Length: 147
Image (cartoon, rainbow, N blue to C red; front, top):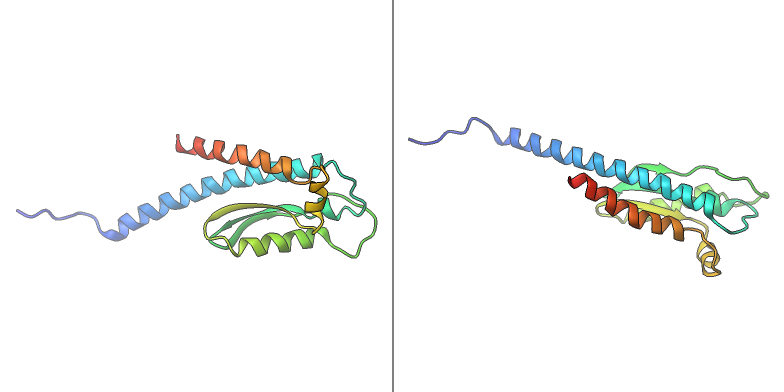
């Protein structure tokens, strides 16, 4: 007597897709939470003098899956002296350029101004504390998802 399945492969595919979507949504929620914390950390605790506010305004994040941006946060957080540059636009463009190269789920936090690395190299905090926060928080929160 042969066994006859009472299901079809479409049902299994639907269940697996639902589980994958649930997991992706949970990961995105974690990355969004950490992205907000990291950006807040960088904007509020950057210990440098920002004359034009371009550097602080260029700080933001994107969450990307397979090169497609799922969420982002770039806002005008500070006002400074008049400048021809737009920190928010520059930061967002850099993040989107990096995002296009990602082949999986990623949180990308940037300070988009070209001189951000120079400011960091003088011992000032632009993204260092935000990176440290993210490096601790993301693995910890993702481990909690496994439970």
